[in-house]
Length: 190
Image (cartoon, rainbow, N blue to C red; front, side, top):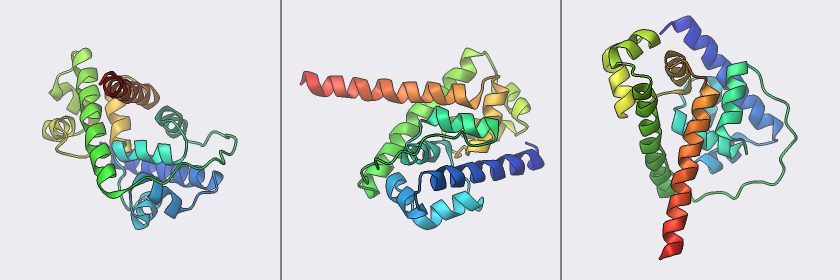
């Protein structure tokens, strides 16, 4: 993966996250409470000192009262879409265990969608790695969940699959919604 391309996109991502947060009059502490991340981690993400993986990005978009596809669209365009201020604040979540459980559950479904997209396009792991500009081992570890995929790497992954990050975000969101609906229906039928 081209380092200059990666760094340019990382800076763009950090700027977008910070601008979205500020437009909604939220502090880093507000984002930390809503995502389950610590405030110093939110600061490091916004300044580019720490990578943000795609599952954390989902929590971050929810903390900003945005859908993942809306945030993905801003990232792809390279600028923040002007939106009306959303003042009704989300309830603060119980962080510790709930965040870890939700993170792991979402990661499982995210990895399923990731693998299905690659296999649907009949793309071998070698071809994917070549298109992404990474080693086959790195690509395999990403798909198996042994290596966190940050948002910029996800953009490269989507480009290798010839889909937009926004389209992929819509697929992930649909999958999460379907899983939640199924869980709700099971709970109701008891």
